[in-house]
Image 1: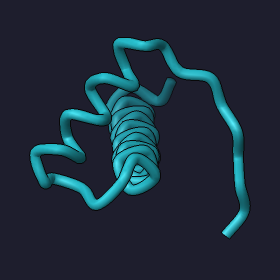
Image 2: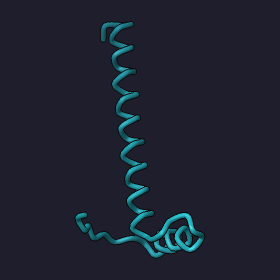
Image 3: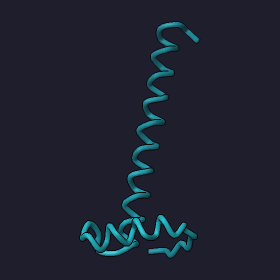
Image 4: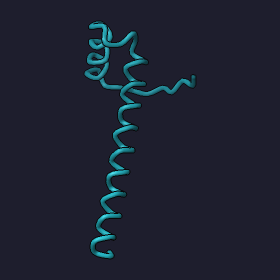
Length: 63
């Protein structure tokens, strides 16, 4: 794995540490990796939905 350093606000660190202490994740890295995976998945879905919408509009209106 590659290491990527970043700066986070104290509030984010506290939230991440709470998730770990509550047992939702084994460590902070897991929380961050999971959040990034979710963001990538969400953005891919949004792009796909946008492309489908454009195709439908083009099919209906030829624009």
